[in-house]
Image (cartoon, rainbow, N blue to C red; front, side, top):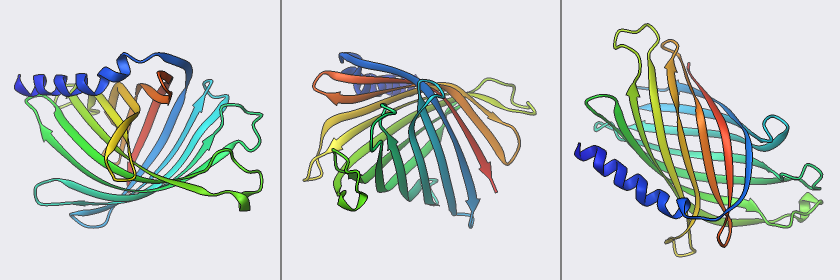
Length: 241
C-alpha cells in the first residue's frame, strides 16, 4: 500500500504542470520500433534500437532513430548504460524545404527494477547531451551548424500479470510515465520539455521475442502555455540474439 501511495504521488507531481497546460495542437500517429539485444557476458549486454514514428497515422514521417547502447548490470541488479542516438526529425509540413533536422546525442542512464507482490515497479534516469541542427535549417548542408543542450529524462514503470502464472504465453499489463526536463548551461534543470504516458500489454512470445503494444500520449512543450499533444499507437518488438 505504501508503495502504491508513493507511486501515485510521484506521478501526480510530474503530471500536474502538463495536466493544467493549454493545448496548442493535436496529432495522431504510430510508433514502431525493434530492439535487438546481444548478451556479451553475465553482466554486459549490447542493444541496438531502430524507431520510426509518424503523424497523420501512416501518412507523414515524424522521426527516425538509431540508438546503440552498452549496459552493465552490477551485483545489486542496478543497470548502468551508455549510448548514442542518431535522430532524423521531420517537419510536419511535407512541403518544407529542407524538411529534416538531424540530431546526435550521447547519454548515460541508470535503472533499477524491484518486484512487488503482484508484478514489478521499475525506474530509470537518463542524462542526454544533444547536438541539434540550428534553426532555420540551411539548404546547403555545409552551412549548417549544431546547437548543444542537455536534458534529463525520468521514467516510472508499473507492470502486473494478466495471464496465469503457468501460461504458455505470459501477458502483462504495462503502464509508464516519463518526464523530460531541460537543463541550463550550468547543468541545472529549469524547464519542462515533454511528458509521455503509456498503457498497454507486454506479451512474451518465446524466450527470444517479446512484444509491447499499447496507447501513448506525448505532451510536448512548444512555447509559453502552448503544447503539442501527440497520440500514438506504440508497438515495440524485443529480440534477444
